Amino acid sequence: MIRKNNYSLLLLAGGKSSRIGKNKAELYYEGKTFTQLLISKARDLGIDQIYISGFQECGENIHTVWDQYPDRGPLGGIHACMKVIKTPFCLVLPVDAPKLPREILESLLVYHEKYREGINGTKEIPLIWEHGDRKEPLIAVYPVAMADTIENLIREHSAPVFRVLDRWGYECFRKEISGQQIINVNTPELYEALLRSSEKEPKA
Image (cartoon, rainbow, N blue to C red):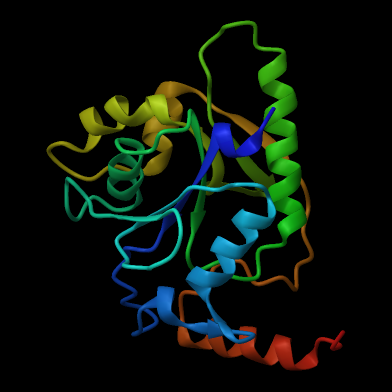
């Protein structure tokens, strides 16, 4: 399976960032913006096409997508990107997870690729990352074919992500992560902790 033919990155960067008070997509960590870091990880995984929801970023094969249904939360961004993505699947990531280990994403994609080989034509379903007692619906692989189902849910009002997942069906991929890893940087305190963690890490 050639990954670039099957997967695009769908990067959710259109949140209001009200708790942190700054645009999370533009925050820096280790010399790059959060957006640049996650795009780089996707490229390393063999993903070529990048779709960014709600934030303008320039670069080769990078597409900015604006919500068709504003103020619908993550599903609004997922839906709008799915309507223009050309690959059958997308790796969905939130922009506020710059430290998300590449090996988590690689393992998620490998599991998805192996899972697809055994489905024998049944409906493709999302694969979401699970760790500890948490399920991460915004760190997941989604079939782009879900776009119309999502649209039916958000046309009149917003809806939680798990509402469409429960309706469509989904699988979980479990892989644990260190409790010291910062996942979602959505407050000033967590951003400061992220920067301090970088200072403590040994330099190569």
